[in-house]
Image (cartoon, rainbow, N blue to C red; front, side, top):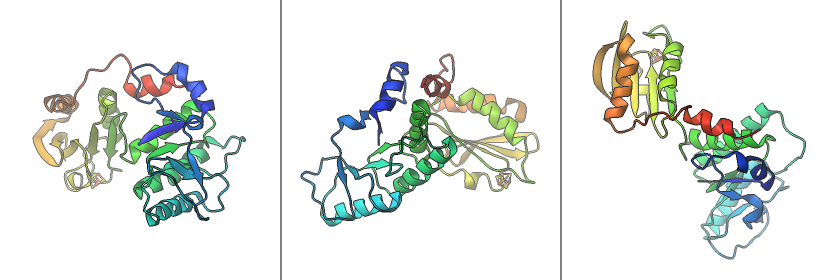
Length: 261
Ligand code: SF4
């Protein structure tokens, strides 16, 4: 899943990206010769490697337009890569950041969940750095790419056996430089293990003041005193070859914060 940015965004972020960053866009939209298609009309594509997208101004809601494009390509027997966009009317007037975020997440996230899309372009967020961060966060949330640690935490309830917010903060402080690792923090063993989805490691309340640690959905360490449990979790991540030492600042802060607004 590739990340595409406009030339305007690229010119603002390029000089700020470190060589080692994982949030570097792969292409500039204006250089790609993308075939822009109105899927409500008849169309043809010349070859199956041509990148296609929905033409701006197409008279359909964005999600429906991309679903129609994917269906029409399939009907015609084509397998072209599709560039997803967060909107079909690029307005120079900036959107309020929360609106831009919600729109991009809803539109692109829905299409990715449908299995549609090979590259994405976010244009609704005016800030260049924020736009790039938003793009990568959508890909991470959709499970398409991983550039930072993923956390899953239960909402807490009467069964919660430790201070979920404080402990989650401690675990994040120790682990947020890891890439491609998913850590679950669950308040109890009654429902926690069943709700950890596809986490790599789990930190689960086993009894008052005691923590059980999991690898995937298998409990491997039991009744660890809470005061040691974060250290034991780090040990467990290390034992399973997923640990790297932090380089100065956490990865997300280093990479994303280096991208200008
Ligand atoms: S995992 Fe346990 S503590 Fe957390 S919300 Fe579910 S039942 Fe409550």
